[in-house]
Length: 253
Image 1 (cartoon, rainbow, N blue to C red):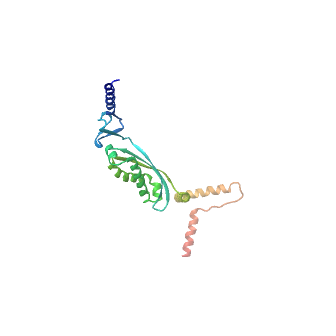
Image 2 (cartoon, one colour):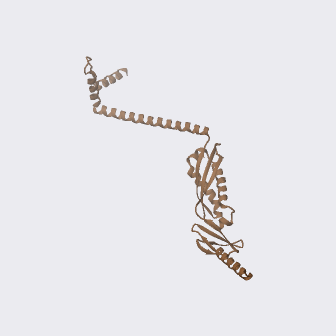
Image 3 (cartoon, one colour):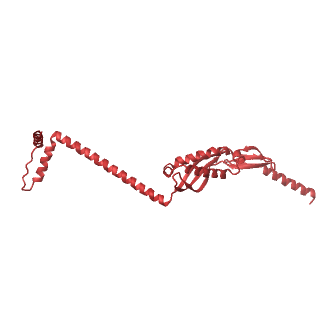
């Protein structure tokens, strides 16, 4: 084969190679960062795009929501209780060029900054607040992380605290505290029930006294007690007893 033919085939293959290298397909969930001789030129949107091979390089960036696991952290709360916490960070790239050009590894940077913010926030609150206000704490950490990552072209959409593990001795203390609280509530409920019952009984006695029904109730009770026996019971009206009481009071005066 002649040298000219070999050279022609080589050039033909090289041209075909350049054509394939110049074609770039950017998916709907991606953005392409074009660097021309190492300098940022523009950002490619989704679709079939053409670039200059050899001189231009394309870096694709996924703009979907990503998740990062923050490994379990041993943190001491404000009231000196050691807890173990792990969390999940949800973030999304909003400016692909900033995420590539301003930080070396934006996912790793977000993870490290979230760990630092988690330690700072948890270290400034007490255990009771940590257990009762987890959503509020998560939002506070998100605001801290998001304020920094926005400069990197990254938007932190949410941070969720997952497991909050406390020492076994603290679990026993918390169980005793919860039991004491339940007993206190039960005592209050019983006292309120007795108070309501006594108030209702007092109202009933007052109404029966005013209407004379208490005398009728007394007679019914006596009749029931004397039925079937040899015992004879004499009942005096309440008014007579009250009259004796008033007479006694006057004589003592």
